[in-house]
Image (cartoon, rainbow over all chains, first blue to last red):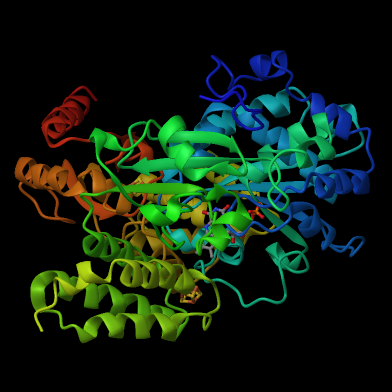
Length: 417
Length: 164
Ligand SMILES: Cc1cc2nc3c(=O)[nH]c(=O)nc-3n(C[C@H](O)[C@H](O)[C@H](O)COP(=O)(O)O)c2cc1C
Ligand code: SF4
Ligand code: FES
């Protein structure tokens, strides 16, 4: 095990960390005190300097996103914390909220100061009710201690934070769908532009940030943006949480400095492949990113640019490890079923394409497939890619195309003619 | 007027929910969740009631409700088991657990046991992939499932119900 600087998980295993007292005892809300002495634009500058990129999947630079928010529009600005966490293989935001809820609240208050936002929501997926209970308790404590409410830490700044529970829909993690859902509608993604920064929740300027992004802020304010930018690689600064699952000895959530070698991570941090088996493939960033074969994993670093160069993406950091016993055709079929089930149905290519692909794969597994079905699946993927309102259709294309091209013979083995 | 009514406690909860939003409409989904907790599922009658409370036509309420998989448009058992079938859980053995559930309860997905106590269905990734396979029962998760653990869990839920 390495002893690396931790930004998010410093106190994650410490007893009583959920309580305000323990959180404070371990240095909590010091960053907020500092931020309260800073100009809003200076906070944004600090975050820009840090090089922090959104941890929800898209990796957009956080400071830049904030600077797109128009000021003095006469409308309120909203910060929405995206805690919908539904990307298959991802379970890091849950850990952060369950074990260190005040870290999220502190990060959110800092973001609200920077954005001059006075009303903010945490959109938590409905299944995480037990997680929301922890967060709600921390929010209550923060109100009672004057950290939230009419005057944040006795300063002339009002802020309310509420938890809003989803009710089961993967698509509501997409930011414009999240906004529709928060407004009380079906979670249909909106066409962009306008971007939420200009017109989001209730047609007002809105920033949507992931839990992990927001929990990086206290560290950045305490230690300075430059200290954050000193960690990681040229384009990937700081640390990243990886949720590791599948055929691995020690599944769980890990925080490593960006740029950490993938194979060292699997073997040294995560205890290697289960039952002494050989590695077959890795899906590094949630089921929506292309799969890497074991050979492709060699030499790859865990950062945005290295994974991109390897033909995949960092995504949410939901790493799914597959050993040599894995049936890749069945695995893809399970993944394709997910997207077919979760398509919101607004765009024809996505609604029809995700369903069709899932059906062709099930047919293939049932021994009723033809060799031409493999090319048909690739054609369905082409038909869906880049032609829809939101990237869910592309998220189905990534596994379909990569599984079929990299493990084609396993699919052919099912074909009858 | 609708026949059904929120309990006093639910009415208080309803007022709290509304106070969290600058516009009433934004409270619709949390109010639907509250209604489901009160009445078990979102029947047409419940949608009517929510519509009245929120000033929306029932059809609008139903259209929203039907988008969200946690809002039930059919009755479910008192304990509804949502078993994750997504990739990490599937890899770690969702189906052997589901076979055991079917055997123990004697019902298929979406059916309710004759005593009204149990129903089950598949669900998608619950955010428990590292402790797979997983299932959700109400506001609880059961993780690291194994076929041989299923009867113990079901017995536990039965006992909980008896002691209520
Ligand atoms: C289909 C789909 C699902 C998504 N699900 C999530 C999610 O569960 N959590 C999340 O933070 N971002 C999710 N995103 C990304 C959000 O749209 C958005 O980019 C992100 O919340 C922005 O926050 P960040 O800049 O801090 O990463 C999803 C995107 C898509 C297209
Ligand atoms: S791409 Fe799919 S999920 Fe996204 S808006 Fe279109 S139909 Fe809905
Ligand atoms: S795949 Fe089952 S909890 Fe994520």
